Length: 310
Image (tube, rainbow, N blue to C red):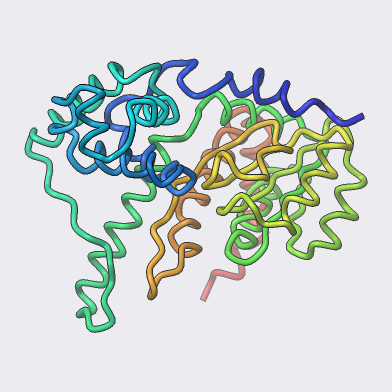
């Protein structure tokens, strides 16, 4: 029988946004970048305003911010709650904290838009900054409770299947090869037909992981749905916490929403955040299985050592 999706949203994920502890000021900008693409246009205007001028917005009442952004007071409150704050008062406090951090001497942010005639030195600087920002945003927005639950599931799994296509398929392969090197059974699937036929074989005690930045990749959602219905524990690594893939995920690990440009598709920078999540999962599992993981890693290093000798 299919598990109740509503039960998972209300229970394992801790209820609606704002029900738990609100994000720290340092995480506010990351939340705006991650959730912005899924907001309505009016909510985006509010989010962009508070992220762009936290000091100015912190001084405004809810009515003032609504007037500034050409929205309504209700839209301002809904935006605050979507960002994880119980109400607008809590958002104002976070904005004041963020403004104080920005005024403490931190270097101003640089634009990462790459022009076709940029010198290669500027390209390196912009890409490096964007990678750093993606990692920082992913770390700030990562739910450690969900992460810990996913680590527990992987640690005790009979087997783990990981689904991903395109750039996300490379991330799926990275996770599986890491798990294999510490003696766990894991398989990566980028072929959608093989992914579904393997998902049919899963059951309670197994784990299925879907990697999809957009959260709406059908070739990844379908096998995760099958695994979910078969009783396996399911995990989604995605940049869209409200995407369709999360309907079939027991645990959702959110990555930074990458900024896409003509010369740098979103898949390039989104992979950076996904790989950070994969490393967090791997290290967490290795910590919990250290007595068996350490010898397995040593054995794999020894088995490959002769291939690295000149």
